[in-house]
Length: 218
Image (tube, rainbow, N blue to C red):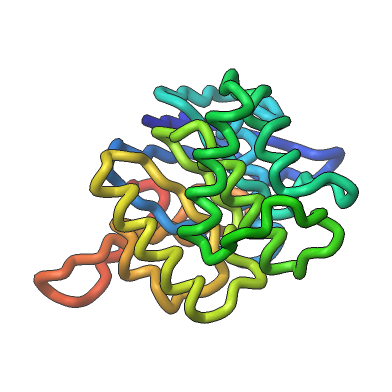
């Protein structure tokens, strides 16, 4: 579903990614972590097509859903207005977008708030709307950049239950996270380093331990 081949990206004099390789298959959940500035958000922007690599290639298959770290929401618009506007941008009729979006929001714990303006919502609720917009077009490839910022504990647990559902549906899911509490529910944990390939950690349930491979080995 997603294949990143020898991708490099530089901003000014700062090399963020250098010949980076990354692959995610259908029905696979990959958690990505690493220190600040190692290129996690840059990787997702490259994978989503928002920015282009300086070299290398990114290949995507299927419908894409992208949840950025900073919600691109308009404070004067209501939740329903966001669903309708984003839905039209995805080719969905407004009514279908509203029905679909309201269902997603209910699963995230936001019932009956369709006419509330974004500016009146808490940070955690805005993030739920941000995530719902990424799910609106029933994506097959999900790129999520710290999607649960501001979630309470219950919603955080519910989020990982949704991740299990997405895997069962055959979706490919990439989640950038600084929280390692639930990453054993991912199929693979990638620890990114500053400039260079990742260190890959594969959860071996039979050993209940992690096997470690260097970037070159991976």
